[in-house]
Image (tube, rainbow, N blue to C red; front, side):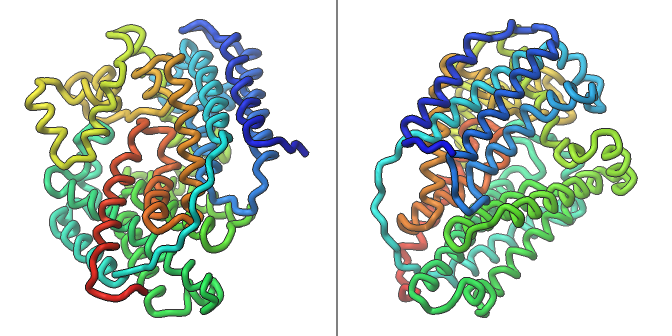
Length: 472
């Protein structure tokens, strides 16, 4: 068993990342199976080292969920192509894979190494404090009201899935709901995350005070049962509408918060939850597309095995290839301008105002929009989204992205500490909001978590300051 101080762990991963820079393949280099195999072996080494260093009993953590999602997005199809010579069932993928896979896989390994280096950087001690908990019922009622407002504004076309099928996904401001309804939707999403944090933090306070066991805290009171029922109703509503992202976000928030602050999630339970979630989300994927779910799942499972259940996530790799082509064949690196959309998203309506004043288009300030427009033109019928690797590369190139990815790893470790619930309610809310999107981050832009963290903090502060009832 390796046992080293945190600075040495960080240095080890950083050295591996620097050594990888020495074997950089040429951009557009054709597929080399031996070289691809070496890079995937380095990935296995990185994961083994991380697991050897981290001996926590809880497996529902920010780092485990991020690493699993990151490996699916960046390495699942390289593994399948190397082992089975199997490509996704889309013509557009294989034409780019032979040209971009070597470089994209190499860059993905470099970024994983430096992310781990950042994750194992030392963090200064934070003050341990438990905040009083106010206004649990007011927060719950507010969440219900906003949910009902959204249900009314979105109408039957949303819950029927019609809006999903007609929408342009992943293209900046476009989505299943737009305008004021989109902001109501966003407020509701973040209110749910704050409610989850409030609920779990309250459980932790009761457990610390010795009032009851964690089982009784979860299921032994009317307040707990009504909160759980409310969250279940919301998840069912979104599943009926064919929206997987919201359900995954809520489940991630609950799983991370409970695992870190209440009771560790053991490996067996963690694996069962992941498998069940992957199967359910795959079923919803085919169901919302209007195809025979059972036959399609069995057919694809026969072709690529269990990889079918993470196939939707893995196909995001195509966005990495397109993003790299865009940065190299078009205008070059964007030097941060593609982050403007996410940053402006913190301020309501700021993005529309900025576009109207600046004269820029959405594809000038949004990575997903730039990638989609590059492939489909100015009138796309569907969206391609982006990936974290593509987002960094398009904005900063490979070298300037390395310290940014390392900093992001450090931030992930910081929020991992905060989500244990020992540093006050506000930091706990921020960590829950941050962690709720951690599975999504490998196929998103760098600043995707900025809005929920900031809005969640503001909403939490408002409810912490309200003095309509006594601390509970």
